[in-house]
Amino acid sequence: MSHTLQISLTPDLYRPVVFPDRCVCCGATREAESTLALNRFVMRGKRQEAVTLKYQIPHCRRCARSTKTVFLAGCIPFVLGFLVVGLAVFLIVTYGASIRGLDSYGQPNNSNSVVLGAAAGLFAGIVGGFLFEVMARIILLPVMGRGLLAAPLLALQLLDDSDYVAGLRGKLESDASSVHFSFANDDVAREFRSLNGAEN
Ligand SMILES: [Zn+2]
Image (cartoon, rainbow, N blue to C red; front, side, top):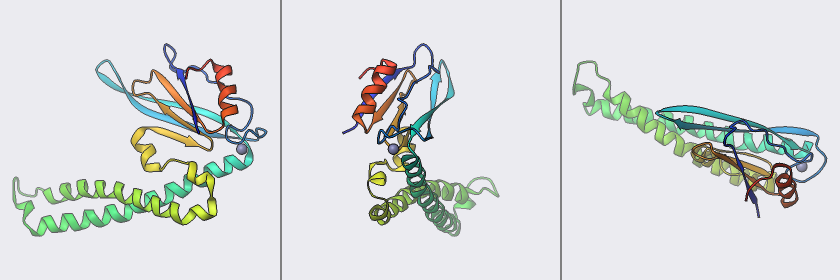
């Protein structure tokens, strides 16, 4: 069971957050740090502003290493799937549209087929990245075990603007008014709450 606590960021967006001085995942002695980075576009009046919050999360050496391998185990197959599937669909759609005469519409030298191919390729690439990541996870699960199982899929993290390190998931509210921390370890969550006066 994970334990979610909310930190209000109003009025100070860059309000410092204190983490307990031990590994957020297993509670062992602090030996290393992992970075939790939250990025989001937020509407400020009429324009969009990029908000980036970075937190240094205490980890033991083992959990810091597991955070890195879990990230790579998601990132490498995702990028590979994106490139392989995206590129294949881009080429097929562009070529198919071109021989069907899509480029003869509109202005001369219009490359309608390339635009259509790129849009289809981008969409297929994201789907391909997701599928490759799921496949890699099934293959790697017996080797990497629980650390991998607990991590959300990279494609889902991209979609909901969250970030994950071993034992902790962070998510920024859409208007940047608050940040949510979900702890896997209840003791660490309790200590975090008393250090920061977090709300439930
Ligand atoms: Zn640990």
